[in-house]
Each structure stands twice: as structure tokens, then as C-alpha cells.
Length: 416
Image (cartoon, rainbow, N blue to C red):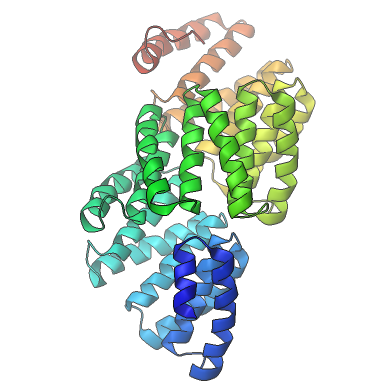
């Protein structure tokens, strides 16, 4: 039974795996005892399946039970104990508990290197997981460095078509995207998607690869291609994962952002007003994806000219972003910039100026001077200075921005 459940899980048939594993676990407790290694393995496997199904609280509860038992029964340095630490950290990340995930992953990675060796698959997974957490925390250079190290190792150790190699490619592409390296992200994502389809089929990792490529197309202005792929992803997520799975909610949110980019504002609003309460119900009010859903709905209200509704949501999400993600996280900086834009449109120029003067140096520090979002912040602050009659300050900023703009986006790119 347990072996069949493992096979179901590997094939992405998580409901079938869950049904078998929920049958296996009480039998092992009864026959072998609660502390037997095979019982602990059954607990860990069921927790992995819960996580794959988006049942993160259930996974967390089981993993927090498994970890101390494995330390007690197997020892702190046993490979299964290290796996339990890594899996719990991955669940913390999914729950938005990024600092807890980071702490555990920075503990487990050197242990994996010491116990298993630098090239062991579990060590490579530990590196990849820590990099994903760094990305979630906005530590993008640290994530990029680790992912550029892990990808060639995965190719060498596991092979170019191994699922973990494909995941490493997808993760590096996601980090390139966050860093504003959209062409590099697109190239990698267009390479990984057909491999995922070939190797995994309609697996959740394939759906993630499709969703990530759709998001990159959107950032590159290829909105029709993004829409087509995002609509396909959403339909498959509902079919494969279910309507309330976190990845399905992300697919809804991503499609809505593409609709907004295409000017289909009512369609975007309808989808976002559907996804926000679901996100609060499934993930919780303080989860990073819920905060993103609030910010995205506010952005759509802004585009529809519903500025007071946008302002209300943006003033709600900004302190939450600072609390949950930290003041320097790229999403927090985006929330600050968006609220400043709304203040500007409402004629609250001093409030806009105050926020823009706060966000610009933070974006320079976190994203770098050449990142497109940093350049947008410079342009917005210069426009605010002009509107306030501070022409010397506007001129100084525009003269600083112009060479960066040409260098980053090219001579032919439209002016701000």
C-alpha cells in the first residue's frame, strides 16, 4: 500500500496517495508502534502529500510531530531527520513563515553537506529550497547565487531531464524574473516547459512552469501569449488540483493581472474579487499571496478610476506588507510605490512625495539602480517634484535617470 501511495505521489495523483496514506498510517502505529522508523516514514509521506494538496496546516502539524520523534529515534544527523527538517521548512515557506523557514534551512544545509556530501540529491534539494526562501524574502542576489550553483550540479548528478533539475531551472528563471532579467527568465522558462510536459505530463510542476512562463510573457508585453497560456493553466489547475488549491488561486490571480494589462478591467476585477476572499479563507489574511491579492485588486480599482477604493485597500496592505514581509521586500516597496501613485492621482502631492522619497533609495538598495522598478520610482518622484514646482530637484533627478534609462532599456524605449 505504501509503495503504491509513493507511486501515486510521484505521478502527481495526490488525492489517491492521500487516501492510501491515511489508511497506512494508523495501521503502522497499531502494528509497529508510534516510534518505529516505518511509522515515522508514513507520517512524513502523508505530510508531503498534504503539502502537495495545499493542506499546509495539516502538513505542518504532522511534520512538527515527526521531527522531534526522528531526532529521538534516529538521531539528529540521520538522513531521515535532515529530510524532516527540510520538509518542515518547505511547509513554513508555503505558509508564509519565511523567517522560520530560512532559520531551519540554514541549519539543515551544512548538515546535509557534512552527512550526505555536497553532491547528494538531498543536499541539492536543500540548496534549492533555501534559495526559494531567499527569493520569497526578497534576498534576490543570494537566491540567484545559490540557484546558479545548484542548477549545473543537478544536471551533472541527476541528469538534464530529472524532475529536480527541471525545478532548479524553473526556480532560477523565477529569480531572474524577480531581478528584472526578463529575457533571461523567458529563455530558461521556454526551455523548461516542453521538458516538463515531456517528463512529467500534467504534473503540478508542469502547471507551475506554464504559469511562470505566462507571467514572463506578461512582463515582456507579450500579453496575448500570456493570456492564452494563463487561461490554459487556470483550467488545468482547477481540473488537476481543485478549485481551492493555492496554485489554482495563484493562477486566477495571474490571469487577472494579464486581463488588466490587456485593458479587460471588468474581467480582472471580477476574478480578483473572487480570489481575494478565497485567499483569506485558504491561506490566511497575512499570507504573502493574500497580500498580493489585495494589492492586485487595488491596482485594478485604480485603473478603473475607483481611486478611493484603491487607496483604502493600499493603506490596508502596506502596513501588513511591512509586518509580514519586512520593509525592504520588493512587494512592500511595490505597495509603497502604488499608494504614492494613488495619492498623486487624488491630488495628495505632499503625501505622494513623502512615500516616493522613502521608496526610491530603498529600491536602489534592494533592486539596484538599473532595475526597471527603480527607474519608474525615479520618474515618478521627478514628476511629483515638477507638480509641486520643485523644478531644480526634478531636473537633477531626470539628469540622473536619463543615462540609466538609456543603458537599461535602450534608446528607442518610450519615455516615461
